[in-house]
Image 1: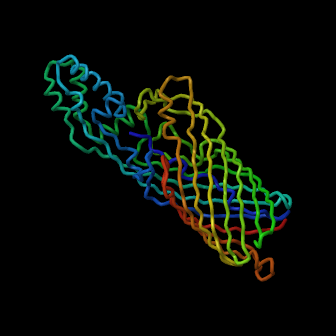
Image 2: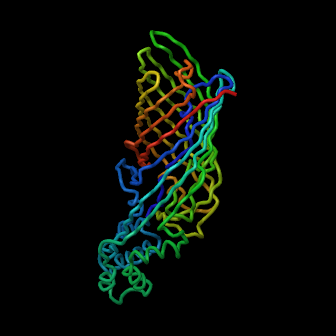
Image 3: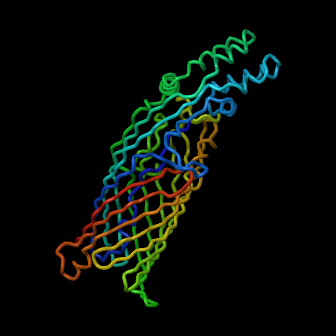
Length: 416
């Protein structure tokens, strides 16, 4: 059974909310609301789209027993029966063992309100920041399915085996949803898996932006924007004692350098390219350190682990059209997160912790905005504001959730 993770389902507010340079002394305040699709899905390591409930799927077959994915106790049972096969006491019994499987269903309800700000420190430098307030709920059910041949295996072995093997087969024959839940919550010390929720802040972000502008080749204008951003890990991060929690934010402090090149024509067309590089800062976190290949780890295996995040490399393009009040934009972007590294004083299989931390995703976004800024400058409107609507979807990826959400925000401007 894999640890249920939707990865960074809600990260910090992006600096793109104020992807413009403000004049000196001019400030902006933005408030918004984001609602995620409750149909929890993710792209697995092969890029296939799967239900988040599949994270709970585990086969109690001989193949998963020998690898350790079915848990240490069943691996030990398999090894003992395999010895009997090799000694001629039995023939092929170990590889015939199949004790059914666990399946799961996951439903999520995730939304966020956020507030952002920007201020023109000078005509060349704009400061920005933001903070989301998150409400997240995860409801999980598990069920036992398939045929269990533990009793039949015991009969085939007869009285020629040790009592320890007989007892192990008796225990395996009683596998069901209740015994699996007891193993998770009592034996291994995990919190109840039925329901988890979080109400609190996500990651705090702040940074600075500058731009170089010009007008050539018949274009109305082009600009190159450069920004530096810091993410402070104030959101909820992975709890080693909870199987069904969601990371709210990165889980670590990070620094980002970003650039965007934008060109626009006199006819209202606009387009651009965005790139960024993010480096996370290492930190010590609490983790359950596995000894084998099973991701269900006993609570006494909890230790302080040093976490060195991999880099994020992103790129994207966008195209838009609009004049004066109304503008539409289509964006296509990609993100690749390089594998994290874990180390600690407790001996264990740290590579298993690292194996699912490398991910990639390709996403698209459609936005529509209504702005009175130009009309305000022409003294046709009394209040300058920008009202925006966004629809976002992850098209493909590996080891990443399919993040689908709708967002609405409004930004207004003031002069100090």
